[in-house]
Length: 416
Image 1 (tube, rainbow, N blue to C red):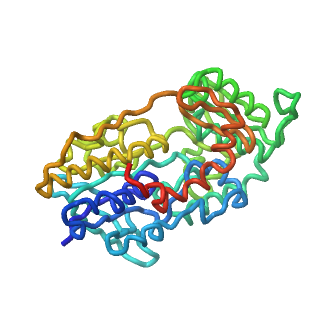
Image 2 (tube, helix red, strand yellow):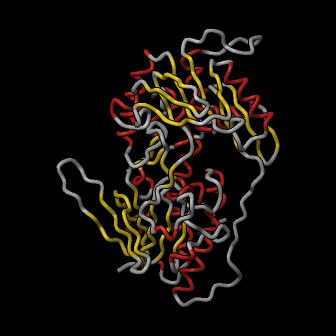
Image 3 (cartoon, rainbow, N blue to C red):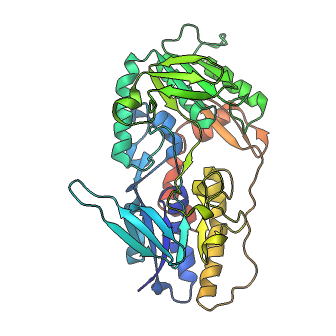
């Protein structure tokens, strides 16, 4: 039986780790033919999730074959060294070193659970979004597209839209909706007068985009005003009616929703979009391995889950090694791979030279936030960047054209 390097999750962190292991880690081991990589995911497709604020409006903005990527197709280059399992992890047994995987069933099939033993385990199950419009969550491509279809059908009759959340997802969604529905005010107008659709962003923070400095947040509010978006700051959503308004499937996704705020105000929304935070997909992980925020307790330097036994790691949104950010995932993968390689060599009776490779999170101000199809705000490495540069790097297509090399492994062609 081959020794299994089991990777849970097939988004950025999971696919990157799989490619790196197959290209560099396994070939460097004493007996490469004795290893296989098994990738488990509840969707057969990966999604360029940063693009969803624009993609949810229309299929015309992006090439759908680049927005949604067939995971298995990206790994055919490795032959029998790779295996894809279409399912979701339901239980992690660290003593038995086994993960229970419930297979995703087709219509008419019964429930099937697979027990997968691992030699090494990487938890990269990511996170889910409060709105089903912003990610695959636990569903697949067809389910997400069905949500978009329902939302698009409801847009023409919507006169009021409330978006809860002042982070990038909420602000980008508001900017895209504002320009799509209302257009943009002229050069000499500070705001769009009498917009066709009234859009309101509710932010519990005293300023929107909390990772960016106040002056950048203020500029963002100015750009939002020019596409007809108002911002309510320092207020949270206390409750919504119906309770699953904007979150559920079917009619509740697009139901008229009453939004009650912590300041006593009530907003009536023809469409409500919860865009605050994410929920880590770690319900299958024993509680003792999770931090208070639900993410897996991970050594932030080595990426090992030290309480879970030997050769267990966590990375991406499911891990608490760093703040959730795609650029940090790209930075940490070589560190994770180097430490996996060291541990596998030790397990094979080798004595790897040197010390563990260490990751150090870059905590400088770093975030790009497009607002509509031509504006944006942001900072890189602690320096404010102009709107044009935000558009050039992210706002043109939200990284869709750049993601292909990450999905197919070309980004990891060289060991770094």
